Length: 74
Image (cartoon, rainbow, N blue to C red; front, side, top):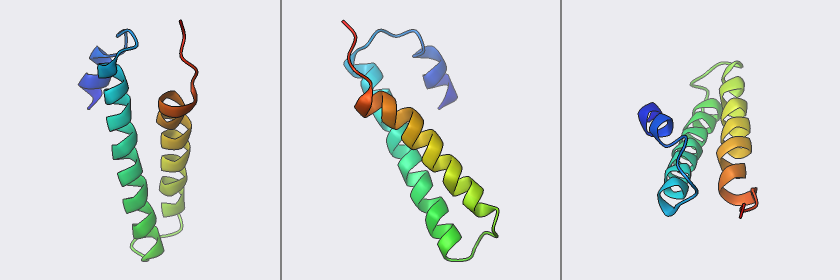
């Protein structure tokens, strides 16, 4: 995971780079859902909301922005 991100850091905008970002975004969404379900079922204590919030901010604000919102540069 980290090696893919490291080696793709200087890649030009391409279908491969967009696929990598989409893959990271989808794994983050899955992690968010698992953390949320764990929190709602009582597996984690109150600090579990921190994990849920971090997933929401980092995945939604990071990968989500670069995948769906950021305008294409020419």
